[in-house]
Amino acid sequence: MSIIRKLLPRHLDIIFEINGRFLSELRENGSYSEEQISRMSIIGEGGEQTVRMANLATIGSYKINGVSALHSGLLKEQVLKDFAELWPEKFTNVTNGVTHRRFLAVSNPGLSGLISEKTGKEWLTHLEQLHKLEPLATDTEFQQKWLEVKLENKKFLSRFIKEKTGVEVDPSMLFDVQVKRIHEYKRQHLKVLHILSLYKRIKNGDTEGISPSAFIFAGKAAPGYFMAKLIIRLVTSVAELVNNDEDTKHLLKVVFLPNFSVKQAQHIYPAADLSEQISLAGMEASGTGNMKFALNGALTVGTLDGANVEIREEVGDDNFFLFGLTTEEVQNTKSAGYHPYKIYDQDQELCEVLDMLVSGEISKGDTELFRPIYDNLLGRDPYLLLKDYRSYIEAMEEVHSVWRQPNEWAKRSILNVANMGKFSSDRSIQDYCDKIWKVGAVKVN
Ligand SMILES: *Cc1c(COP(=O)(O)O)cnc(C)c1O
Image (cartoon, rainbow, N blue to C red; front, side):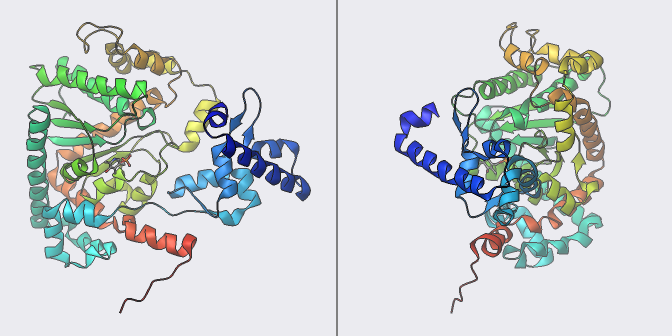
């Protein structure tokens, strides 16, 4: 409130007026306890006063949309429960979508051509038509063509990476990609723990089950977000370590592409084999990168968060590498009292990998550079990286095992694309028209 009072004093007056009127309506209604009323107030009391922007938005809005089935449910059942009881008709869901004209037709001409050759061009305006690919998923000749298109896209991205970072990436490697804004809840540092685990195994002479992989990161950090910037520093430090170590450089490559943008993204999504959607369950409202990847034939390793849940429902459990706690398990873990150092104590590999953060091994002898990450993970670990670590490592072992069966991989990739019709923004905009805006089509003569 102190910030709003200073920057927007008149707005604050109006917020108080809205709140005053709203709370008297609740009191006149007669069925609300003072406890409920204070929960629904726009002003948070107890300590320093705050302005609850979600409450303000809820009171002021005609409709409330959580942008995926999971998060619309969380809003109704938990975050805004009192409001959902008062105004059930306000609460709705429109799952996000992406524009497949940009993110498939324009950015992946190779795959688009192959799809049109087999199914016609109707998918450009009716994405459900991708279903026509389904019978081709087990056609070995088609699988071959499918994999050739992916390889061409990976060759292109390799040249792009070489130009931007100087790192040489072999296009035959598994392209394991995490591109999105840098945030602790998105857990780019969980991906780093996986890379360090592989590094340690290889250094110990254990290369069994490890498929040669290129780990490709990109994403921006907010200017004032210290931990996000430190995570980027961690990725680039780990890149320098594994890319230059004679024992690991043929098996592992790590790149961080600077200046992630939509234009750059259009080169990345079509070249991905694996899509990393590893946020802590309950944190990612929807995600749209998850859709762009799957639409371009990447398989997903992910948690039951945001639209991942619906993508998995559409493409089938067998074609999605699932790991990690559910939203409910996250809540139970936190309320039971979570002690990350107990997990650290009981998992030898995790213990060794975490200690690398402060051993100086990845930071040219500097034992303090990554200590804030180390302390955060062993202290509160607010995004439960340690809790989900073992399950993630196991999911990645499964990924590597399927990767060694190209026909199986191709089949799953084709089935992913064939079942992504729901995630066109054409469908989500139609849902907005029907459920929220209540507008029909205009007849064009
Ligand atoms: C799609 C996209 C995002 C969103 O990615 P998520 O993985 O859903 O967080 C962010 N930035 C750019 C440039 C994108 O194209």
